[in-house]
Every structure is written in C-alpha cells, then in structure tokens.
Length: 299
Image 1 (tube, one colour):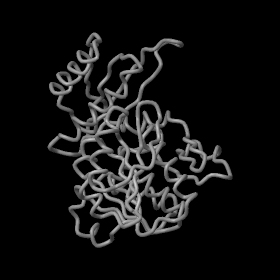
Image 2: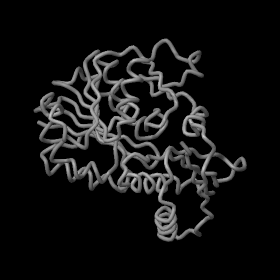
Image 3: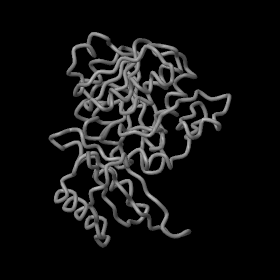
Image 4: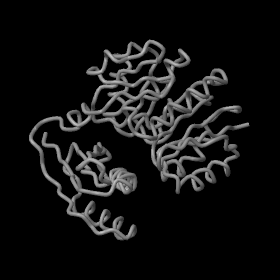
C-alpha cells in the first residue's frame, strides 16, 4: 500500500499548532483511519526553522490540508510556506521515521525502541514500544505528561476501582498503568490499528490483563460493564475531551481520578470548565512546552 508524506519548512514555534490542525483534520476524516505521524528536523544549527514532515498510511485530502494550513499561517501573521504532498514507495515510512526517536525517561518510566535496549536503566519501569502507525511512543509532550501524572498518582496509592485508557493509541499509557500497579487495564480506541497495536505491545512487554476494545467513546457496553472506573486516562484532543465530559464523569467512580491530555495551553480553561460542570474538581496541570495534561478528581 502506498503511503504519503506532507512536507514544509516552518518556524519551530508553529509546529504545535500545525500538529493540532492535522490531527483535527484526521479526526474529521470519514475513514477515521488516516492518523498522521510527525517528525521535524533542524535545517541549520542554531536556526529556528525546521523541516516538518507528516506521514499518512492513505492519501490525505490535499486540498483541505492546504486550505486549513493556509488559514493557520494567515491567523498567525506568517507567510504561507510551500507545502509538498507526495506518494512514497511501498515502505513503512512511519516506522522508518520513528526509528530516529530517542528513549523517553520520565523519572519513573523509560520508554524505548528495541534499538535502544542496551540503554534501559535498572531503576525504571521499562516499556518497549516499537515504531508503528498507532499514536504514542512517549515522545510527544502529551504522552510524556500523562506518564508523569501517573507516577505522581502512584505516590498516593492505588486507584480505587478499575482503570481505563480511553483513546489508547499504541497502548503506552495502558501498559504503564498495568506495570505501575500490577492490575488489569481496559483500553479503547476508535482505530482498530491502535487496539491491535496495544495488544501486541502488551505481548511484547509480557504484560497480562490488557483488554483492548475498538469503539467510539463509551459506545461498547463492555466499557460500562467494567466500570465505574477509579482512574480514566484520556490523551486525545481538546474537542473530543469536551464532548466526552458527561460520559467520562458518568463512568468515573466516587473518589476517582481523570487524567486528560492532548490539549494546548490556550484550551486548558475550556476543558477544565467542561469537567468542572460535571462536578469534577481540578487538582493540577502538567505543562510541557505548549501542551497540557490535567488531573481532576471526583469527590
């Protein structure tokens, strides 16, 4: 199957907005299966401009991408750069790009690819996550912040009830919870590639007790039957987080915790407000560059 690459030269400070824009476009794709994977590279040492690349498993809507990115640049007051979209030879360019990623050390967790197996510290909870098409290698600020939030939550004890990774991607957060507390974990995602990847990553890491369900939101009755949850982690996007606020609150047990990420700093108040309306109390925010992870508690 032919894969596709989008490429442009852009100022480093605009990359988070471009990533959010492309993720939002993928979310509205009727196929719901063409999530991009991103990489960016320094062009010349000391300069702020980066070569930004997005890889797609299927041909993206080039016209829509160009129109939306053009609006993004106009709104920021920047000149619109040349945007190249091209088909690639039959090769897993998503995996090839992710092989360049370095291990992620969050203090409690160490997320790595097999090419870095010799670098795993003895005092970390190690997670082997190979390059693949499902989102979540620990590299992105949102995943990194969720791992930090989980580690801090573990210092307070175990979740008071079952746990759920909502929008699991590669399953890195589900695996982290399973390893952290030695408990079964429910994981779900709208993308069957993601749930299959989660189960494969559980097998590779020799972690049992992971159940991965392909569904939208809480549509699968098995998710409701397994709850209410003492902990729900949702690393998705601000829009879906806001839409899912009533459902997340309904499936969260008394004294339960929600960790929410996939949002930018400018979206924090809107997401907080949506969950505070559901009687969840804001606990703290984790900031990493422009991205945020929120922790909320239900009394």
